[in-house]
Image (cartoon, rainbow over all chains, first blue to last red; front, side, top):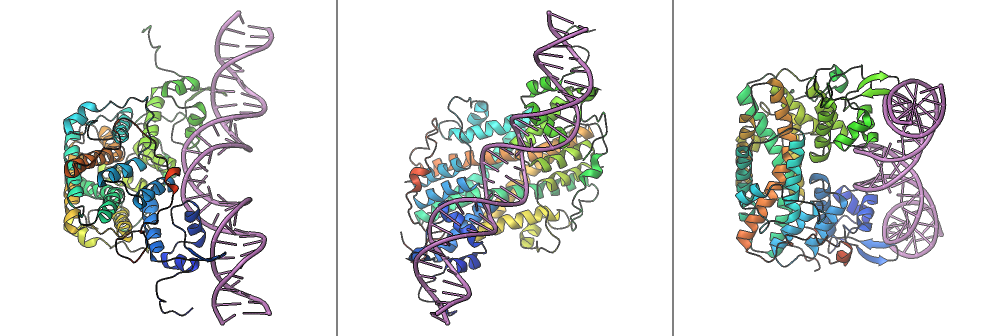
Length: 246
Length: 246
DNA sequence: ACGATTAGATAGTAATACTATCCAATTCAG
DNA sequence: CTGAATTGGATAGTATTACTATCTAATCGT
């Protein structure tokens, strides 16, 4: 095999693995799981792959790695991209559903209806699953004893509306396919970006506000020593009656 | 004294399980894992639990369930809450570190320094791990062929700054402990709330923009049929260009 | 010709978050 | 007092997820 690119990029699986830095066994796994389309069989035991496989693998790794989708969720998203619905809006719905657990019909999901209506995100505009996800997240907060003020939630909602508008405005309308891909990736892959941004902004704001001592060393990673923290201290309900182990 | 609710709430483990709706075996697991402090032994084979255990269990469930922390990450956070550092700012750092994977010292983390400096989130104010998380998330985006414009990222950054300022401003300064709990829960448990909000806002904005057909039924959950979509349909792995099939 | 490579099938693994079982020591109901 | 129920503590088992590894027979490359 000479190193010049022959006609089209035709790769054997070991080369595909080398190019994408994904192990052969893992590629086979993605093939089995229908995340990745088959290569072209050149015989009973040989197949060739091309750059569509390279791109797809990168996409899979981004969804599974960066966006932390499960393989199942990633498959749903990818299959929708392969076989896109009529409107980009429907695709958005599919992307959202793929990453939002189903909610049985008999579960009450009206816990935040007042808020949702206030923000214009009621049942007439937004899907049930996603509303349920919000309700569930709010329930988690409050069961932990954290009750955010309506004002704070309003501010969050305003910021998120801003982001969502930026998202939608920046969708390239030239090509349907590009638009669809943009919507899905912009939704899913951007989430870790946004969360990281929030944390950075919090550190900044916290520093401004509290001046505060050292930031957990900006250069080292003194991988927290949980054991050393075991020295009891009563707080949220931690009254060590006896010594702990581990 | 009080005829109702005897002295203090003293529960046996089965009652604790009933009250919190967490199985006994799982409570024992949390005890073993040091997420939950021991009860008071009344004999070699009996112990009593009180409402501190109830609160703690709810907190554990919120962190592990709602905020999707691993048991290990939850333990780190909880131990920090039990034994809080001097400043709330440090606790923020600990909370962030607990949910952000460590980065070996030899990994380059400078990929977004220009952006970070622009936003005021440079190495002097923000910790390395969190900056690395942003770099990694951006890398995932771009390896999937998604290159957000600087303008879009700026807009995201502005929105996140807004949120972070709201976060920090709303920290109750009266009690150190309350403040600490607020910071941690506000960071971790609020993330799913924010992501759900963004999705709802996107659906709204998408509807406004694209008018579009039906939203994936606002009331039903026609639990997507992945199998039925298995009919392969070769789409391009990522980008529009390419001589590929389809 | 013949070692290297591959498809496809199947089996094994590591990590995670529980669940279940056991046993001896109580506790409690009658 | 007695026997059924409960518990702490230890240990083992399970379900799921996302891979990894092995094997076989066919085929490629040289």
